[in-house]
Image 1 (spheres, one colour):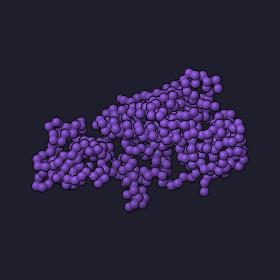
Image 2: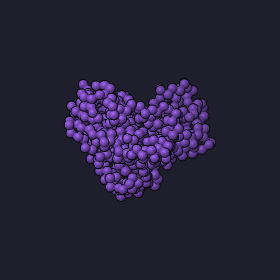
Image 3: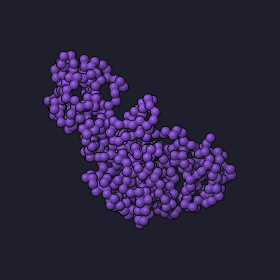
Image 4: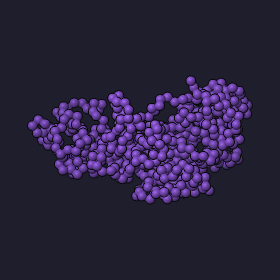
Length: 272
Length: 274
């Protein structure tokens, strides 16, 4: 049984900031979904996040097509070929930002987080750098698929502070990796199988710091459609203060009947 | 002959030989060493010889001139000194020689500009998100570990006391690897080491745990690994999986050592290696 997916996304400047440094992008034909949260003063943050999104989209639209991307992509090694391709795309986005920063001094020191999901039939890979997140909502429960590259997450992981202390820590803003800051970056990559009715939530920290996991789950479950869920999530984050830019992208996997598969194939020209 | 190397983000932009006379540094075009950046004052600083010593003098610049991260008014340059002007660095070499990047202290534009801000005792501007230079931190960590045990702290960053150990990843060492031993049913092998993030059970070519029975599902289930934990997930609602003889209702179950799983006509035991 093959799976199809629906997507909705929205970004909002929030209630405090004057500019939106978040960016998102996706391409249904290539199954790539990206959310980036830029940083660096003087408008360079939004430049960095834009470059990252564009570079990733471009990679899958142009570069990856020339490669032998076979379906036999689950190997006995640590990660799949699909995840490796995603990792390579992230490295190239990093290089693109660093090169742009070198060309223009006003953009020196700019950087961005990235979370991206690459879907291929029933499987998807998740890649991330920084503290933007991916959640999976499955069977009425929510799980965080990414571990923030942040100081407090490392501290929690080592048992120095509790998860509650982490939420109040004044070091919350310190991330240990970002695109543009180091070469090479070390993205975390993961492979997963999608099941019908799974919902993936890609979000910047403007959302994840404002709302708890359970609040995100409740908003997505209660909403009538993906776009409504996006709107509700962003409104809730703004109601909670909206101190940062807020971005969320929702992807829902749906099981198609055989005739729906045929229809989609006919309409879009690709089987997914 | 002594020289100054103008660098930006570890790239050498220009090199200026320091002969007799004064080398003026600033944003305006009339400077000998021009740095066209808003953070640099029109006439920012100058370098000249005095009694056999090379002197660097700040010419009342707005953002200041820093030598080895200390703000200066006038200072005698020593070989290897790193001068920070705005976001650019100038390296002073007493003897002319081939530029050897590896011999120089690593000057990271970001971390230095960050320290500049701290030196001026003002909070980082505009965007509160900061990136910790992990490479630098790792170096510091390596030093700290070799010299002293325990929880040393990085205080120079002045963003609170960070336990150094917190910055080291993978402290606990190796992770546990799961295994799957098939006890009943037709599969391509009997014993599987679940070292990948995702192991697929099914008849499909992409499945690592390959089912050989006729009419077996193409993709029946997957075992997903996150850190030390393994989760069994059914590929669809029509596929029933059992763990220790109990059906898994919402399609996902964490596996414990010794668990017996049943899926698509095979029975297998999950365990950890070693």
